[in-house]
Amino acid sequence: MKKIFIGFFAFSLLFFSPEVFGQESFQEVKQKSVTITVDNEGNVKVVHELRNSEDASQLTFVDGTVSNVKFMKFGIEESVPEAEGKESIVLLPNQGNLFVTYDLKDVLFEKNGVWTWDFFYPESTAFIFPEEVDLLFANERPIFLDDKKGIACHGCQMLLEYSINESRIYQNVKWEEKEFTVEVRNQNGVDKFVFDQPSKSITFDTIGENRFVTTIIPLELLWEPYTVFLNDEEIPSRQHINNGTHVWLIINPDTSGQVNIFGTTVVPEFSMMIPLIIGFFVILTLPFMKKFNLR
Figure 1 (tube, rainbow, N blue to C red):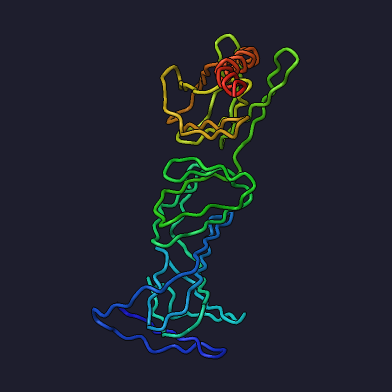
Figure 2 (tube, one colour):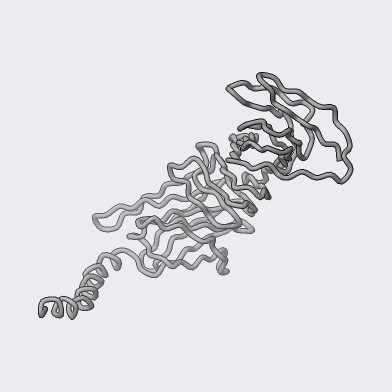
């Protein structure tokens, strides 16, 4: 494999002619951080912050098609065209702390509105996503970003999935004097939303196959755990997020059809249960209070 020796001296880069070094190998350079930024069109930018090494060392790029490689030091940026299309570069010793940046292609793929990246890199890696992304999946586990910009992945191997510009449908459910908002996200939207209090269920029609459908349910309206049916057949739901007031329930239907979400407790049963729950805890703590008073 051809290896490029690269050195950063004073304010310029010196490139040593590419040579074939047979089976000679170099120790992987120690990295301070790896940051991957993704924009809303699927473009990927990688930044490696490297520690100084007293020996010649190797930087392995993130797997993909590497282009627009640059070195940064002392606030100076210089292109490294010889490194483009390579899997790694060899750095001369005593280069100090360096930043290596490059664009990465052929890694993110979009299908049916879902971006997917089968990612592996042995170093801890931070991912920064577009503002439009607030929910993603890592190895099929949902991660809610909320006001965060991204995630950190330690010794990272994951199947990354996320959507941008999903349709968001807000349904207001009124019960007696209370009003609840249920949000449903899907690339193609949903239709015929119904909340049915007697059956403790939420029902809607979804359009499109193999597309994420996320339903954000107020817990006071419909309590977990949930059972989900598609066209009267039970289907699995993704692990859901619970922030204390709402649950993010995620499914990935393999066809269009009617979705039924059944809960265990429904308004006003939930509000009626609160005094019972409080009373239960009072009964449990009463013996301990008496014991404390006797002392």
